[in-house]
Length: 125
Image (cartoon, rainbow, N blue to C red; front, side, top):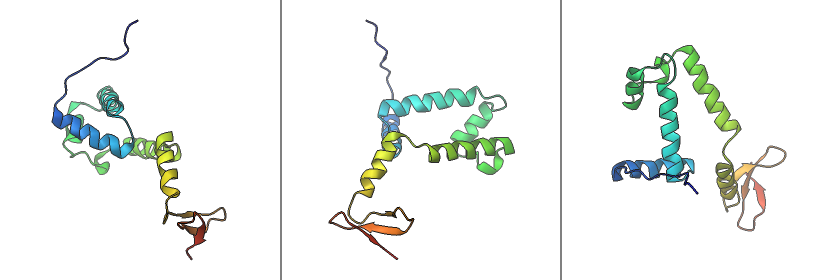
């Protein structure tokens, strides 16, 4: 049976960057590398987004203000999608944080509450 995986050599400095980013977005190291590879391919294949724009983005010189109105709308649409549909592991992570003592959130009526050591929620205001 053929394997669906391949090994590649990457610098330890790059892998450390991958690990840091992966921990922030709750991905495995492999998933983060694959995400960045797919993102890079998508950017390079986007009409009107040439290699000069890619280099500006990589150098941190491509700001929201330098994007066209269409590109800005796409950025905000994608951000909105990420907020509206977070990955299951991110939802689970925040649910775990919400169960901890001192966690603050909203009750069913939308009032601000804090979780006590007993697990009980107490209104904060």
